[in-house]
Length: 632
Image 1 (cartoon, rainbow, N blue to C red):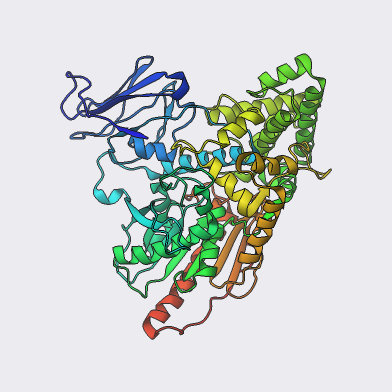
Image 2: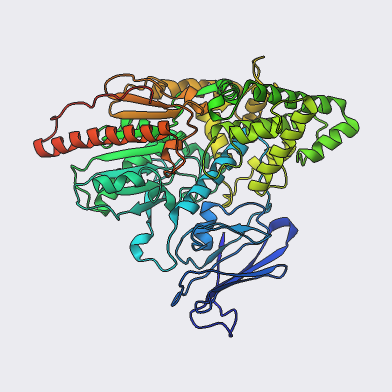
């Protein structure tokens, strides 16, 4: 998967201190060779970027004397670098600036020199057809942006400025002691604020994508660590990022991918890392997580209360559901919410735009061909299933504007999206609303560096059937498997009040599980029931839990938004979107978000005071924490 790169001298005229890497790779079926060479001249402060087809040079004001670092630049990625690729390609920090080099944008990010380059898979363009895929890609893009712009590491930092990367050997099948197979699970450690061995440990759980060093550097839990002298650890989820077991992603291997396996990893890691870092047996471990990882954080406390003292679960969809029509119910309400820039007119304009798309699809001929070109559909639109792929991607575009509203790095929020559809006058017509939707598509595709918004259904299925691990992938095949075997979460729009098309419908998602994994619709429905039975759905019955949600986030419909008892607390933050409480703080944060974070701080203080009492007086002392209000 990776090939070593030799350190070379790019330019003998450059002052001493210059470092560079060069290499080449092949892009699968096209056999197109690409090269990258990036050098740093330490004395004259010029950063020279050289390639067969493009070159550019720029300078910076920072003092980079005595630096021997390499700046790697990949051609033809067709999208922003992922967190994982930044780690592998050792892209070093450019402070708070982004340089658009025409071929690719390099954003601020810090990592140590790795000496490896990425050998790409057979296709440089990601398939974004399905609603879930596009939302996941958008979420990863925003996470990368926030981590990149937030790290702000110096060019020549001390060792403590970078988090430590480590690996744990975990059993592939933790429920079968006779199975000796294992895999390596990645973790990150930030011990900058850890002052005593009996201090708290904040464990940030990874979810359905790779977990980078930013997980222990910015946002919570890292932002909360200095107050309590906490050790911060980030644990990547099995089968995602670099924590993929040997053997690939075939259906036999994927039997070992589930939330239950992930929780077993948490318990095993908790014990192993306590030994590695010599953590006191009395130290409280607090779990953090957002979205699916937020559910894992809550379930870790539920299933392992003797190992996890408390958990903070952000935007955690703890109730599995086959038909997630509630998602679009929240989207529809949010599009009318004036507090975040919505309006009834905006909601009506969305319906008008989708009606125009469907009209052109029905018209066929030149109208359909023009639509295909204007909306970035890279597959045929002659078949109903292919039309559903486009309509699903458009739904995800609108849903993403709501789900990630107001977040740093989000290409579109509700206010911007509504302005595109309504125009400067604030009113709409069907053609004008459609033109606004076209502009929104262009904004999103430009931000994600995507050539296509949707592909044919056949292409989507073919992509999801690939069993070789792809470092560049955010785990679409793996997450689809988990939805087919545990959660459902299929977003539909069959209610007449839904502002979108009724395509794709639930049978389309269920058929995808059958086409890719051979799973029947009845087995998927049964799996959803079993998940809720095992974890308790929206009444888990655990203690020392805090659920945080934003009422703009469509996923709050599957989470817990009201106190369930004195030790199962909930915060519902007005006008806040998905996992917004976990993001790095900004001056533009709303008063309700600031108040929400204060309440999180207060709850954590209560828990750690209780833990301290237990340390001083022995097990069983202290009282349960008092719940916070259900709305900030």
